[in-house]
Image 1 (cartoon, rainbow, N blue to C red):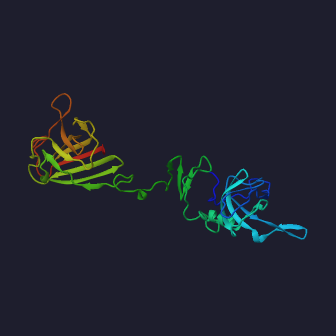
Image 2 (image 1 turned 135 degrees about the vertical axis):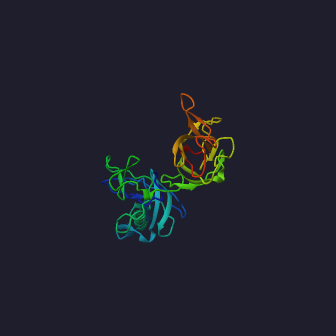
Image 3 (image 1 turned 30 degrees about the horizontal axis):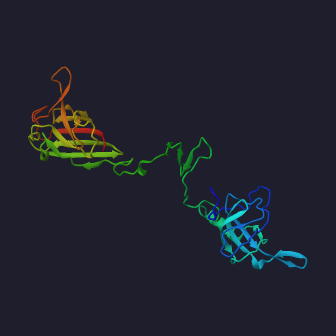
Length: 318
C-alpha cells in the first residue's frame, strides 16, 4: 500500500544497515502553514511508509555549531524523491525556516505513540492478542494444516471433521431456509375431492435454501371425507414452488400411501399441480402398465372415518 501520514507503523530507515542521512532544507525553505518541503538528500529515508522528522536551526557556541533546541519542530509526512509532502506538525509550534535548516529523520514522541496505536489495535499491552481480532483473511502457515479456531479445523473451504469436532447441530441456525432448518408445523387447505373440514391434519415442512421437504398425515374425522366434488384431490403446498413445467400437471414430487384403516395400504403419487398446490392420485393397474387415476369417494376403497392419506414430497421453492 502507498505511504500515508495515517500510517501507524512507520520506518525510521529504509536500509537494513545504514542510518538515514541528515539533510538540509532546500530553497525556498519553509513558511508557516506550508505542507511540503524539499531536502538536500534522502539517503536511507523510507518512501513506503510515512516518515517522522524534525526541523531545526543551528547556532554557534564558541567554535561549535549546535542544534538550537528552541527552534525544533516535529513533523510527519510522506517522501517522494527529495520532496516531503502531506506535512503534519506533531510537536512544537510551526514557524518559518530558511534554506539550510536541518531536516533529520528521528523517532519523535509521535512516532512512539503511532507505534503504540498500531500495536494496541489488535494486541493487549502485555503483547498478547486482543480478545477480538479484525481481519479479512486468515491463511494457513503450514500448507497441509489449514487453520484451527477454538478446536475447529478449516482446510481449503471445508470444515475438517474429527471425533468430537466439526459443526455441531446445536450451533446451526434453525430458522426456515437456513442450514439447520427445523421442521415447522403447517395446516394445508384441502379441496377438490377432499372435504376440508372432514380431515385432521398433522403436517410439517422444512426448507433448506430453496429445497423444501414436507410430510402430510391427513386423517378422516368423519364419514364421506372424499365427497367434496368430482375433480382431483387437491392439497396446498407449505411454500410457493417454482413453475416446474408450465401447463404440465403430471410432474411427480414425492410418494404417498392411502390407508384403508385396519385393512391395507394403497400406493399413490403426489403430482405438482400449480406453484401453490399438488394433487394426489392413485396408482392404478387397469392395463399392462401402472398408471395414475383419480381418487374418488369409493376408490381405491370407500372412504370413511379414520382412513388416512400420507404424503412425503420434496420440491424447489420459488
